[in-house]
Image (tube, rainbow, N blue to C red; front, side, top):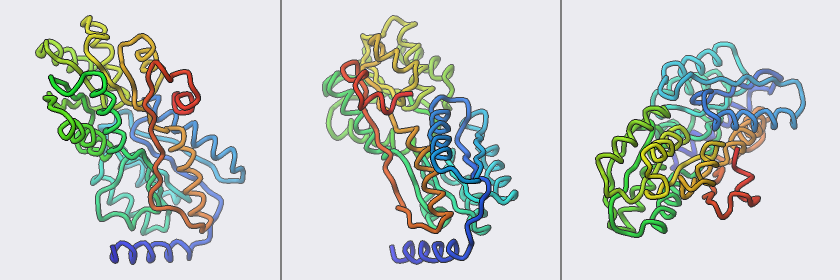
Amino acid sequence: MKKLAAALLTSAIAFAAIPAQAGEIAVIVKTVNSTFWQNVQKGADAAMKEAGGSDTMTFQGPAAESAIADQVNMVENAVNRGVSGIVLAPSDPDALVPAVKKAWEARIPVVIIDSMLAEGSEQYYQSFLATDNKKAGELAAQALIEKVGTEGKIAVMSYVAGAGSEIGRVGGFTDYIKANSKLEIVGPFYSQSQMATALNQTTDVLAANSDLKGIFGANEPTAIGMGRALKQSGKAGQVVAIGFDGNQDLQEFVKDGTLAGIAVQGSFQMGELGIQTVKKVMNKEKVEKFVDTGVVVVTKDNIDKPEAKNVLY
């Protein structure tokens, strides 16, 4: 902890020496092809509009979450063109560290959102804004146990192995299941955040496990693929399904009973707080090292209530 405190102090001193200038804030997410990240963009746009001033924002991400090298290039390009600040959702905890270190060396403040960077890289960024994914996974597990009970077989449909959010979320889910039930877990299966892959994997899991009682889809494209597979196989409503994230497709699955519930992150808040936080650093204001952006379990019972409407997109 002393090392971390010293590193953070050094980092703060380094940034204090640089006068904030109007310029570009680069927001770089895992992929632009997902309504979750598009909702992050809406939040970032809202914060830029609210702040006014002459700063501009660019928003980009690879075509797929698995295109990690493309994301690394985007961060390096932002550093090379001398942006004033970076808001980054890293697709891989290790692969993005060297690029974020380059930003730190160039005195460019970085705010990390959604997924953590590898341990030991804390000095290179100023704040981490995210869902407490372990807590979110536990909430999803709790919701599933309430519906299926504590015995039988469930499946876990995950996305990109090793992504920071995946480790916390799926780890939190499976740990809670093991500690609080005798449920047998099939999987996890990794969709690479591809809806079609998740659909095929879920179809196979349902066919191979006729006694399956429940299933968890750990992110937006995976949960959509899972929902579609349940419908196509005629298992919708028979196998208790909990999804993650809250776009229009997933909301419809909750309303028609295909999914018993969805754990929804504050994606808009991530974008909004990401911009607000990086601007504070640019203005030499103090920021928290970690900010929990929250999660709400949305079911048929609360989908039309304000608590759900605030996070759905």
